[in-house]
Image 1 (tube, rainbow, N blue to C red):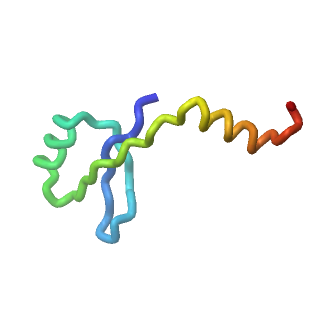
Image 2 (image 1 turned 180 degrees about the vertical axis):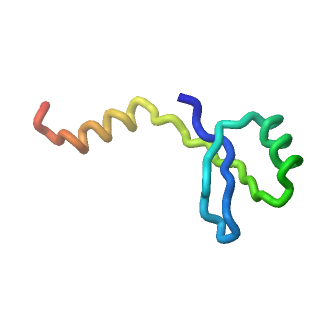
Length: 65
């Protein structure tokens, strides 16, 4: 699934809604709605294989070994 890339926030900085916009779509939206605050969201790194194995071991424990 494509991750969220932009979000609309309120005056206090709380996320109101997240979107999967390209750079062009976000630029168009901000030009058409200058009073709405749009922020770019950070990309979440994909977990690597050792991280996945460690999380699995933490969940299951030594029961499999």
